[in-house]
Length: 484
Image (cartoon, rainbow, N blue to C red; front, side, top):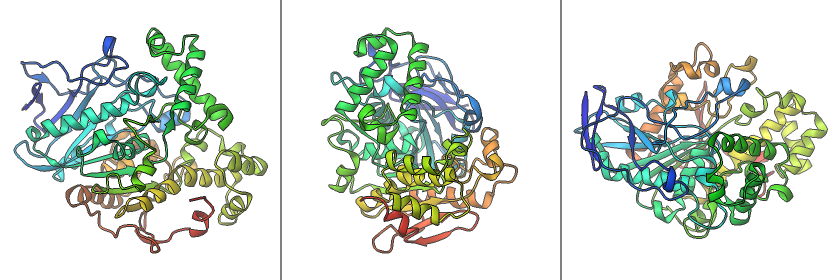
């Protein structure tokens, strides 16, 4: 067994230098619910840190999508915890802190695909975290403290700054990285004054700096949730609702957004498709992250951002939505949901002559929600490294493609993880995992992942696929179809 000391007490991990379920904040329940995180109560006897701790409350996965992207749920109140993989407790290694995705309503740092053993093998201290989700993390009616889920992330990064040296990590070389909602969190942290100085590099996978909502929309979401629950639109009333009923209502709210994503009905959620997401409150988050970054916020932070080539296929193929899209629905959805002109739709169709209308819509959704925001972020933050992951999953008879989340087992070099096997198939390319994982490690160590930064007019990007390389100004006609 391995022993490490934290400011709150000693923790006992495994001989492999893995420490799981370490509290970085007090349980966010009772009087601490809907309040900013506070430090955990100290302990004196060594804390057993050999198993994952509780995860944030969430519902389980169902259907075909749930089989492809499983969830790990561990009950318990003390879910503001983190996990550490270390190469050497006496070292001074670079640190990487991973923020999980899950649409701000699901996910945890306890998923087996996030196992950090291969990062530790390659000289990096890897940390995964949990944070408050859904209403507990992002519900706000305009009073009290907003963005509690983000404040949890800041508390975890503060714990890393204050304690990671005891695990062989260098608090002066911290890279925060995340995927999907985790990437959106990373980009929001870049814009938050309270997070300044807590990390030195950042990686955003499949999420950028455009997924926040304003105060009015946050209040609208809260009112709609309260109406579903039959309660007053206050945090106090929501806190009295049984947890399972609240989780069910959150899922119902999400389905309502996806069924009728209209600005008149949902405000900015019609654009983000995320009813629970960071709120631009004017103080903790002074302005939309993309605006803050264009104005020079986090200019001293090294940044890498990228997307997968066919992100939206994960949401449209296994669910059967793509198969129900015909040409009229394609044009209607592209215009009303994603703001693409008819000429733009024609361009996407012409570039994919063999694609079905549903597959064309997936390409448009991928660019609207992921690729174009990533490019705008690279344009806003000088010296950003841009990448695209293009290896295609063999799942769904080969139609799933280079979809959302498919890069994760390559980033963590965990192609052998059984939970992700349905997406990877029988022979995922280890040489590609070697390339991708090494780029993430090199970026954490040096700030250089191994290819030139993105600049105009060259617009260089690293493309990871069966045949990898550098692309220049990729698909400019489609990029120019979107407003700047």
